[in-house]
Structure formats: C-alpha cells, structure tokens
Image (cartoon, rainbow, N blue to C red; front, top):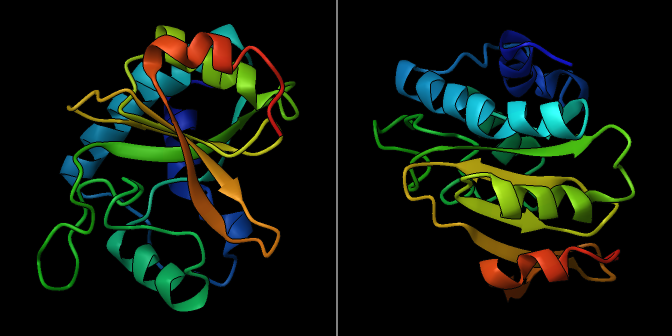
Length: 183
C-alpha cells in the first residue's frame, strides 16, 4: 500500500511515462496542492485501503504541463472542466479549470479488467465530485471538490476512437449499474 506522500507524488509525476519529452516542472501552486491532498486522503487512500494499489494514468497538470499537452496531444482533454489542472492559473492569471477541486484517472491493481467494481465502491462509499466511467477495462476518472456533486457519467468510445458523452447514471442506480461488467 502506498503512503500519502507516494500517492501525492504519483499525481504529480504521472506524466513522466506518458510525456517523457516534457522536461519542465509539474509543481502545483499552494491552492492546487491543498486540493490534491484532499483527493489523496478522501479518494485515493480509501481506494487503496479497500481494493489495492492505485496507478495514475492521468494526474495533475500544472499550467506549464497543460500548455504542453494542449500543444502535443490534446485529444480527449477538457482542461476547462476536468479538474486535472486543479486551481492552476493560465498565462492570463485566470483559472484553467472552472471547477474547484482536483482529479485523476486511475487503475487499481487486480481490477484492471473490472473497473466497474472500483466505480461501484467509489459511488457507494466516497464523497467524490465527478466520476467518468469509460468501461470495465479503462481507467476511471474521479474528482474531489467542494461541490461533491456525485455526478456519474458513462463516456463511450466510438469506433473512430473519439470519446463521446454517454448515459448519466443516477447515484441511487450506481450500485446496480456497476454490479455487472460493462464494456
């Protein structure tokens, strides 16, 4: 099981494997660091404690990393809404993401083909803000923020690879919905 600081570091350092050419800092500003700490304590630690080791497939984006990603691989990113930039500011001094909080996309060791069960656990037990479900064998997007909207959406991938909005899943239906394998 990871410690608090190693989970926090996973949120910051996720890009090293996916974007090895990015050589600038991905250090969060203080407001973002507080949100990331809450994401770790309220979401990631409970997942690890109950289910197993968490790997971050898409984590925190500083302003610098966000600009890099938007330049080299912007596909399927939504920095104004997805909370990966947390409370970071753009070059004009305005927040990149309009929602408060922080987000990550993750897989859980031993559940890589059963992520619907991770989604079920999150929906039943954790105070998340948003949960985007892409399928049982895909990373799960989870955010934590002050709204605690507990909004759940299934996002589909078309045959051409583009992600599109799918069904909104009501919280009270999530346990039943995520009880079965969803591809």
